[in-house]
Length: 306
Ligand code: MLT
Ligand code: MN
Ligand code: ZN
Image (cartoon, rainbow, N blue to C red; front, side):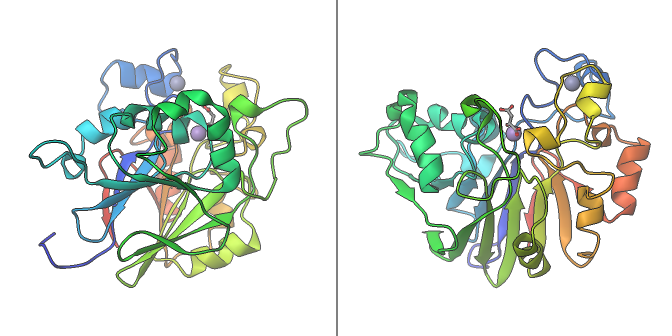
């Protein structure tokens, strides 16, 4: 992008779900292909997006546990010198999951930036003292009320709004509600250079509010965790359905393809894709189905100029 031309630019830092692709302890069909270097499966780090309007200053949506590796792979995020510095001006967290927030620990070298999240997410992180290594005196944490626009970068207006979800995996206890609407799981609506983008890496179901936001967006990044709700169980990889994990499936009744069918004029991109999901195999019938429905499949390093 030439300097001076303003456009909303999104870089996919990571497109995988928790564990990435391949996952360190997984020999499922997709992971086996990835381990063997088969060209049909691209390796993926855990989900995150970087946004900019000037190409020089960036706000990150989530800080996955793979963040250091993602910065290394993304020249736009390298320090420009001399001395210390970073193009990363702010980080927005959509929840307090490990794959959304643990990457903050990789940014503990006294570099000023601002963390934005809901009070509930900041509270969860605040309870975990390991995050205090990211010194609040250098890296302020700003609580953002739902529905109140804020500008983490000049010209980039963001708003957090609630979407159905659950408490982070590491805070689960007793009976877990999976469709809670509150500050625990939020979606980011971004507006810059006259364009709109919605980032929803975890979503239990599409509410009327979310549906209306998507209708007004140019680009949507959406939860693509599992292709079928019982995929983990059916493949002997775990005992939870996608819905139990707070993720609606891609296919099937009330899956993402069906729920987002009417938004054909929005660029719809699936991300936070779990390594069990067969859409990750290029040439698979599941990939074909997603593409035929008009959806794209995010990959690490994908650049979207809105
Ligand atoms: C999720 O998206 O369900 C969580 O990130 C689970 C996890 O921590 O791996
Ligand atoms: Mn996740
Ligand atoms: Zn796997």
